[in-house]
Length: 314
Figure 1 (cartoon, rainbow, N blue to C red):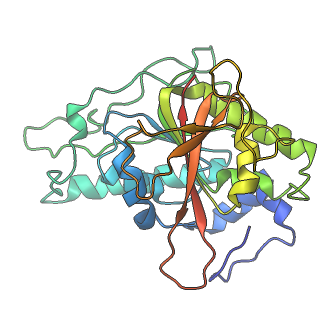
Figure 2: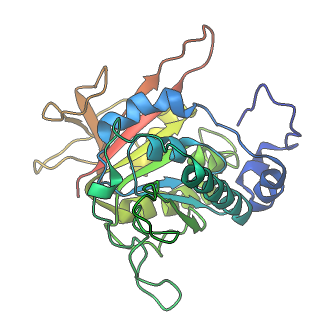
Figure 3: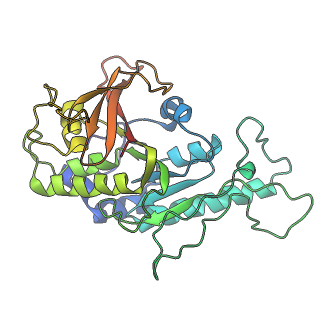
C-alpha cells in the first residue's frame, strides 16, 4: 500500500499494514486519513445504490470520514467495524462532540435535503444472540439523549461500533446487513501476499475467512462494495476463490446454472452506474455475482482505483 502527501512515519515493511499493533500506534497519533478515494468522490457511486432503510456495515473503517458522509447523506443505520479499539474510541468521542454541538446550536441544520431517519424503523441487531453479545436492537437514531423538551432539536443519527477482526465475522447474525462497504480494508491483507501471481496460502485463507463472513452476514440481494487499488485480474481470483481458474476463459456450464467464474448476463440489472458492464462474474463459493469499474481520476497520470460491486444471489 502506498501513501502520498504525508509526513507521517511510514512502516519499514508494507506487511505492517496487516498488523493490529501498527494501527493502534498510528491511530493514537493520527486523527484522519483517507485511503484511495475521498468520501466526496465515492458518494456519487454509492448513494444511487442505497436507501435510508438499509443497514450498512463499513469494514476496516479506520479514521476515514466515509461513514460520517453516509449518515449526513441520509443513511441513519451505519455500523463501523475495526480491530483497533483506539480508533473506535476516537470515533465515538468525535460523534459525541458533534451531537453536543448539534444540540447547543440555536438553529439546528435542516434535514429537508435528505431523507429523515425518524421516519425509518430501526432494524434488528446484526449480532448473533449469545451471552456475550446481547440481542437487543441497536439504538434508534431518534432515541432521546437529553431531558425531553418540546423545543429540543431532533437528534442526528447515531452510529454503532464493532471491535472485531474482519477475518472472523462469525459473531454477526446471518443475513443481517443490506450493504457491506470495504474501502481498502482487504487491501491491507494483501500486503502480506508475497507474489501477486502465487499468493501465500495464509493470505488466501485470511481473505477466504473475510469474504465468507461478508457473504454470510449479507441479506439475499444484499450488496458488497469494494474500493481497491488491486488490479481486477488479481482481485477477481479472491472474489471467486478460484486461483487455478484461467480468468480469460469462460467456465463451462452443463445444467443451466452459472458455473464458477462464468460471465453471466446482467441485462436485467438496473443499477444506476455509468458504463455498467453487460455481464457479471459468478462466485459459487460466496454466492454472489460481481463486476468492477474504474474510478475515474481527474488528475492526469494517476493510477486508477477500482470499484467492485457484488450482489448476493444465493
